[in-house]
Image (cartoon, rainbow, N blue to C red):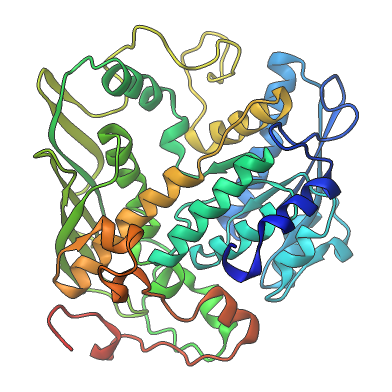
Length: 445
């Protein structure tokens, strides 16, 4: 059984209702294998990233039609957001009737009841496990933004839902866009699959930058659940702190190139400049991947400091920044999959666009694609690092993700308010800066 009462029987029942066949991909309709394929898409989370994802999804269909003559007919059929006016604003751009633009804490349930084939998810990360479970139960293909959880149980829920999606033949694509960029894909093929540089020795990954625009400059003083939703990038319980919300991209690359998640983590950090919310400004982690491999992780959101966003890994025979410079013997990218925005092949589509091209390409051609486990594990590394830094203790992968008896307080750690709490609205508002009690302090009881 999955969290929230989602059973295998529910999935089987949903499969019959949606016309899915176990062991094969969900069929979009009678014409899904030939010309004139209709793809119905819905959006949950109608802020900037959600609107961007929807525009890129629609554009992906145009690109595939122009390049491969696939004849995809894209229809935006529903939108959902905590705030109905945002849902209506997003829907209006694509002619979605107002009665198909849903608001309120249960907006995602109403979206799942529509005839959408694909659901795009761009709400606050705390909602992702619950929404993914609902989408899989409803037989929907999914694009979900990163990160996909804020605590250990949430990460495990996403992995479990992804496994059920695979059994149902449903596609799950994540917003860890480096996984869809040609430079990263071909470098990973050369280094990880073909062993071009030999054994991994060590490395560093970072997302160090200045103040970011969505961070509040003055205390938010939330009074309602809606106040938290509107300002979610400032709250640990909703975004997981910026180590999850942003640095997850780099941690995903570390996992990808190491071929596994780390065995353990120690770290530190703190809050020095923020004036609102309850997050830290910087983190520094030592990720132990076993076999003597340690990768240093850094992330920071403080202006006026040295900035670097990227990855650098050291191998026996050289080093790589993970995106380009090393060509594989054979590219894993299908030869007909569009990757360039110009006929000369000099200008690549950005990763945000490419992830939607890849989703629709595989959906229409009946090919599998499921990134739930990879993005959940990258998110879990960020969560593990946050817990280690907040507490000043070593945290292991086994005690957080595998064995509930090793350290129950880590395995079961659940941040509040949860997605389910938001549906009832019955929870206290979190403490906020400048109150020192709002911030985690290592060693403080």
